[in-house]
Length: 171
Image 1 (cartoon, rainbow, N blue to C red):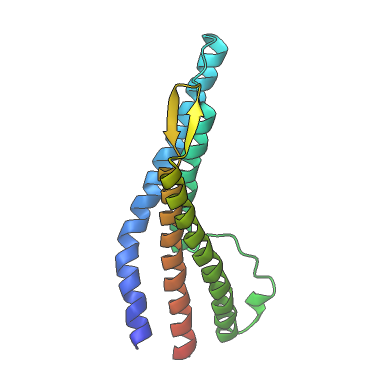
Image 2: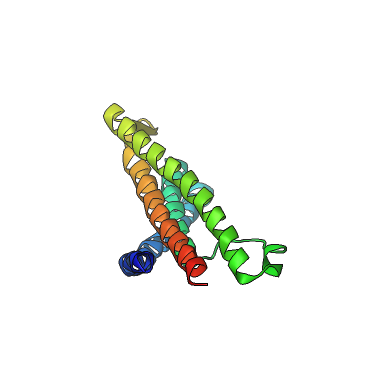
């Protein structure tokens, strides 16, 4: 019973927030696209490219990936091949999903921890990307974005894991 309530608490907290974060990622996809188009037009027609568009684009991709992957996991939209698992009974499928989600949770928990450590290191070193020797783009905000995105993913994975455990216990 308490597991079900825990899952509901996570669901109530994450369901309104994650789609907004996914939408922010979608906006940044458009920003990256416009940056690329402007760079190509500037380079091709005016012989004046946007300096640092590659570096800025790579930083934008960090925002895109770590904001949209959480939304995809919330919808359980990741690709899975269940050729064999789909032939098993429902309870066995839930048990297999529990083991998969435990591995998923462990992997992304370690990744989240290491990203936060790396973010603190880049902040303390004041690490920057140098663009055309005039623009200094700090790295740490993007590493923090990646770490926060991974942390949110861990919460969603944990929520789904609890839901599968509840389904196994209820059956």
